[in-house]
Length: 619
Image 1 (cartoon, rainbow, N blue to C red):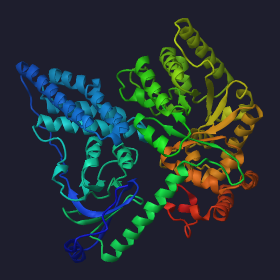
Image 2: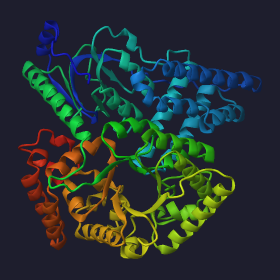
Image 3: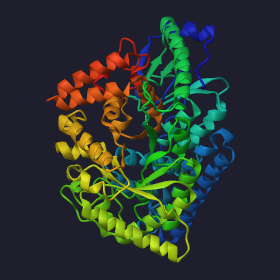
Image 4: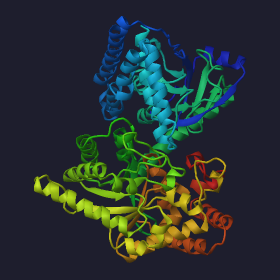
């Protein structure tokens, strides 16, 4: 792990005493604490030159744009060639950037706009980006919406090349360990930091799920993004403390603060070593009750985190990004197969559960004709859309089945509301299998199928559904939303989204009971599974498999290993009898403080900030 030097020059110490300390808050993107001088990069704001062109200039202007795209490809390829061996597994994001440069939404639309509107390449490219923005603005899913950042990084690189400017931050000027301060950094910039004297970085833009943040965590570089108020208060060589745990940047700290954070720095390093140790341990309670811990993932560059954080496979591989990345063109069967196969092979011998397309609602694919819906969350989405667009579904099923020849694969069908849908899906799956057999294409004949329980009707008939599938996976995000009639992205009612609602807990308990009575496993892949404070409840209910963001696996394992299963079962018995959310919360908090004080009691917890933001104990 790369942390700030404890030895600071006397000159900087003296200077920092003369300046007033200030704290800037942002989002904690990569954990750790760093102390060092600021290296401020220029914001790199580009003013687009807008110019009308004559008919005779169209070809030359299009050629100028193609030349800039080619130059950008060369830059990214050079970075890929120079990536250290330690980061080879994270090269996928840069490879995807190479593909994005020739994406129809960027490349073809810009060329067409130059010709149709008779405007210069910079202006046409800006128009193409505005169109992409309008498409992504329709998406409520934060993770998908933030993929727009990747496109913006690429466009900026091309715009700089069109204006004959150097398209990359000049990190080469760093001659000593520093904290990089910038308006934004691309994944390509972040990868190059591996060879530089970068102690940490802070940016105005970005989020925890951006590729830049993912790479920062892989590099072990503390990072704070989304700085409130920007970086105007930071000057070159200002002494900075970057707290990647709490999302704070302290400018010109006094000696007492420096000493305090140097101690925190050492304490955190010791803590991380303990966490790494816990990652490799089984998720087993003190009295020997064992559960499986798997990861939710969507992108190939997440695989190293899945492995390093102790996951026993992937419990939810989302496939939507393969479709949404290019709304103008559906991925081919071969593209899907290639992606699935890589995940399966790299994670072998661990299993990978691939969820079929959950598109519609707040996600979009422009090549699929969808009617405008008043309430898309209740409309044509997920399994309903796939059963309507059978050609789309057929290609994905073929790709998944073919990938199953290279490792253990399970198929998960989302938003199933009743037995009829399962029977339709199983019939179609058998047809695909027959076609593969006829063409002598190998696949796993014993591949297991499961359904997501995320609709109240599915809970009510869980005993019937359990006879038709090999496993359940409870999707608490949608289940809570549908059960409580709450749009969790609507700020006006999002506070009513309550996982501890008595009705929600009873639905989860009923689902698990129905699964076990039928002799199948009950997994959970919703956000509740990745919330450490809910682990005792899920243990007591009998959840067989927890699937979550890989980063929180060590924390959840620590909680599980501190519990007794018998105590968790008794807790659940009490919670199911509790009449209100407040009483359930009180009982849970009392349990956690008694059984896991070092994890949850603010008086004893080393790092309570690692609990999910919504935890009652942390509020």
